[in-house]
Length: 95
Image 1: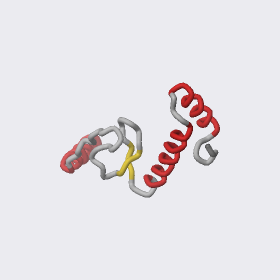
Image 2 (image 1 turned 180 degrees about the horizontal axis):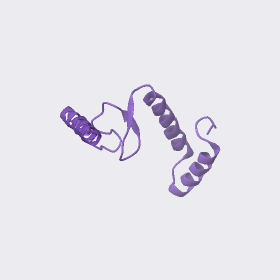
Image 3 (image 1 turned 90 degrees about the horizontal axis):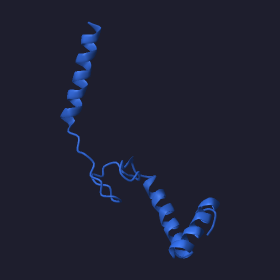
Image 4 (image 1 turned 30 degrees about the vertical axis):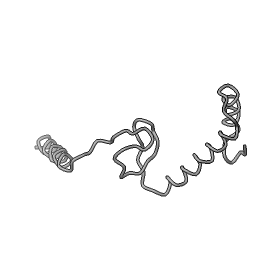
């Protein structure tokens, strides 16, 4: 494994886990390269963080492709009602 793919500390953990779990180092390197490539693709799109698995995904996604978390759909009228209530509260506080 090269240092540009995984830091030395992570490499040591990978070697240790490969020995205990029976995973080959080649599989770990392939997974690391895939993860690096995936991160570079994700950088170029607008993203949000999944509250379930903490992965950054496309901002327009309704479902997380990793853990299948369904993001709640927010109706625009709820936002307007909240803004209206804040304005009413501020006005009543000031007057």
